[in-house]
Structure formats: structure tokens, C-alpha cells
Length: 77
Image (cartoon, rainbow, N blue to C red; front, side, top):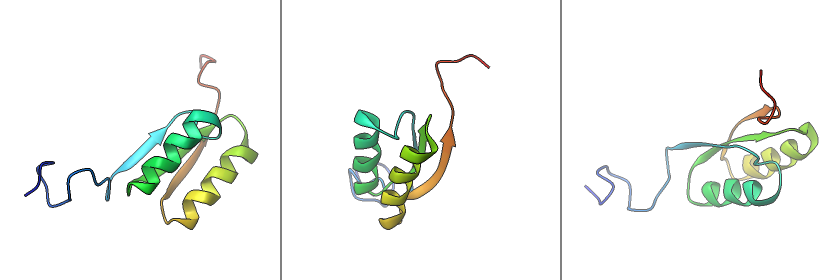
């Protein structure tokens, strides 16, 4: 066992999936890429299919892409 209570090394995100809102650009993009570098699979969210697709492609190259979700979270409904 490790400090995380499972068989993963402490600090590893291997086997986990993260959903990062606003991950198609800016800080959200950097967070998504950092989580992938740590071992997590990442679901990309953004308003633009083009920019979300760019991040999705970068994650797929690392084998860390979990899906793309498009929408404006500031708009109700």
C-alpha cells in the first residue's frame, strides 16, 4: 500500500479520469495537460469544437483522452 491507500505510487493519477471545464484554452488547457502528464485520462470541455479538438488531439497523443464535451456552462439549460 501507498500513501494514497491503493497500489499506485503516491501522487500518481494513473487509472483516474478528470473532467476539466474550460479545458479548451487558457488555464483549463494547462490543467488538463498537467493532469494527463500525471497519468490521468482527461475529458475535454469547451465552447468551441476547434479548440477542444486541438486539446483532445494533444491528449490522444499521450493516450490520455477520455472524451469531448461542448457547451457554455454560464448559460442555464
